[in-house]
Image 1 (cartoon, rainbow, N blue to C red):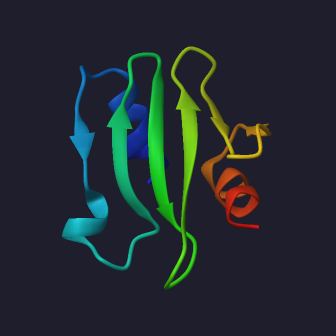
Image 2: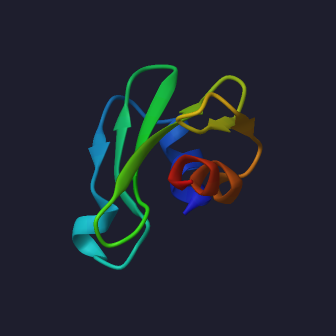
Amino acid sequence: MSKILVAAAVSGNFTLYPGFLEPFRNVEAIVDRGLILEVVIRCDATATGILSFSKPERLYCSSKNRCYRELAPAMADTCR
């Protein structure tokens, strides 16, 4: 999934819905907001969360404002 986010970092404005095409993925939507990508993730069957990816810094930041170099720890921190 992080390959999609890296590819998105060099593209123009867009919204992707990988969760629509593959319903069992953890990433439901990616929204380009310029220098930031908003990533809507599925935490469990009933909960979702939003984290961000900074294009210039290449950091994933959880909803708790803690940033990571990898997507998985940011997802875990957001879903806690």
